[in-house]
Length: 274
Image (cartoon, one colour):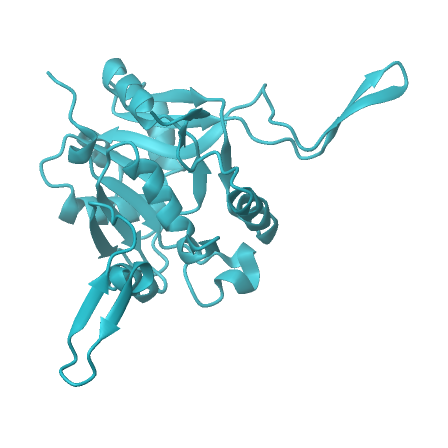
């Protein structure tokens, strides 16, 4: 059987969190709508997929879903100049840059609903007849080669694939020559550990492990049962990865963006896009 094209694979993005650890930055908006530079982190994440051929997005919303809905319903207002004729109220749009060829579904999956239930509820309405689908969080960025992960997923023939990433160390490290320091490294990756990087591929049979009950947490019983049933594999990614849990995370990610050194922007696996 031939591999589905990425344009045929729906991408479900979990966008319903409160973002409480971001404090005032997410006081009036869901965390995926907190800006990195000139656009929400959600748009950055979608562009990671979009540059690699994915174009069907299902945004699993909850608290302040209206903020996400308004952004995409009025995409032109945020991304184009325009002229309004005040007499007849006609609008002429001046497209100053290319707009992505995306289909974006904003799906209300309930305030306070947990991650597994959000996926189950949205997939019941919008998965269609797709055999494979992707899932990610609305706060994580990586220079992941998604097609390499998808090929890995297809080849092992299990229901689920998780991206494994190396977490940064909690503390900076000092390299010593005797008792003299030779190099300081600020929180380098822990090369001896792997954690959930939040970029998943699933076969539709995985939905049997989920429930639409609000308390279903993807990262708890469903993933544990998939592992116990030998239905989960990990695709290792040693490149850039960062989540945006705190204001310090936001500042670090934004500094990369503003410096033109964002690994996730136009890069795949650390290499420039062809």
